[in-house]
Length: 193
Figure 1 (spheres, rainbow, N blue to C red):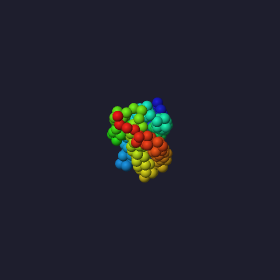
Figure 2 (figure 1 turned 180 degrees about the horizontal axis):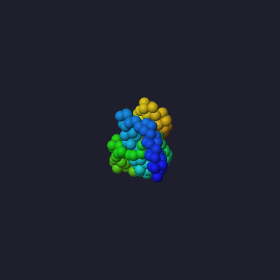
Figure 3 (figure 1 turned 90 degrees about the vertical axis):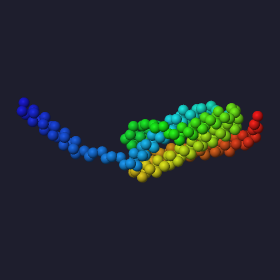
Figure 4 (figure 1 turned 60 degrees about the horizontal axis):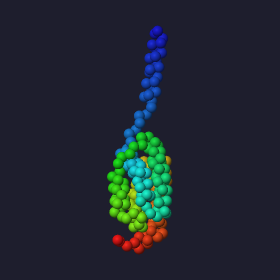
């Protein structure tokens, strides 16, 4: 019995020694905490866009614009998954925090749909403007986040964010092309009834 008690006491000492040898997790810097908070913001924004883009596609008249919205919906779903990967790399749970900026921009887009006539190029022009506001917000956010990731020594995270940044820039350019290829001109020819 004495042998067992000594053995248990020794085993307990060893496990304590092993625990003590592990370095305590260092607290995140203020910048890293800010970075993770901003990730929550853009995560909400991307998830919100997954719900908003189908409405924009439905409201669009131009098949080219409808296709642009459909394609960007698929890209946005990838952006959501990529952000979940970023949270994982950062050792954080993927959490969304309401993005007031994106909520406001998409609300403005809904207003454009309500205030313009269905089936018109003018509505398409408005949808393109609203979508480009979204893209510009995302471009500035991903650009800033990628830079902060590099600053805190997270090049792996920065690469993922830079990939999304490149895709957001492509989407913005595509919207410009759609607008310049007749939609703006067609809208300028529409007469108010």
